[in-house]
Image 1 (cartoon, rainbow, N blue to C red):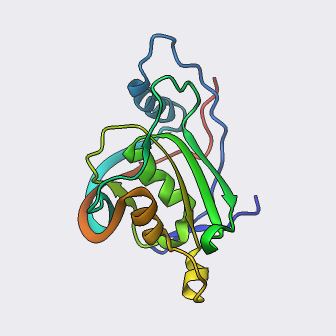
Image 2 (tube, rainbow, N blue to C red):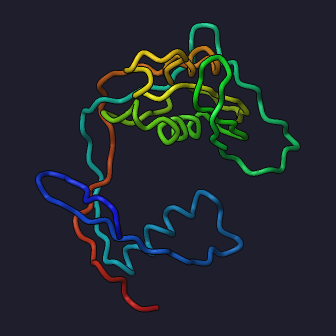
Image 3 (spheres, rainbow, N blue to C red):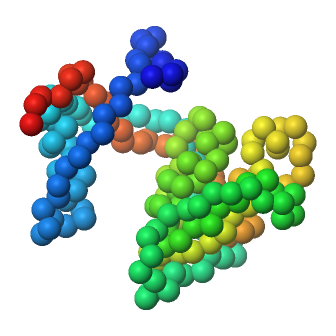
Length: 189
């Protein structure tokens, strides 16, 4: 596999990767798909899990003092949502992302994925209350570059100055899933 083991509560887990190929009924609503996937995993892998609460470090994505600076996506935009990442040289930034059709919860998820080095101690949770869908460009330097004194905005500065949002570090009760049981091999079709 060539991957590193995950460490959790003094136990080592080697990641096992499966490709799940499934057909979703045409009449299924988008909101039903996660529940359908959970049912499939429960049937095929005997996956058993439960929800729990834990107080932990989070980064709350909130609207900054002067409001959002992102542009609302065009209503007639039929393209897919997502972010494209690249390298940039503008204003000292070394990384850039152009994102389209992003809800505020998508923005929180993408920030975590785009700059994971900044968020090793907790997840980003959307607390902005924004209801729109937005397009934006974001440029920042990595945490390593910031720690080495490089010029350019950290992800925190970039989010505030370029998006009109802010990331507030704090402790909060968070719901998470605990895996109680999972088989290594799925059942046959």
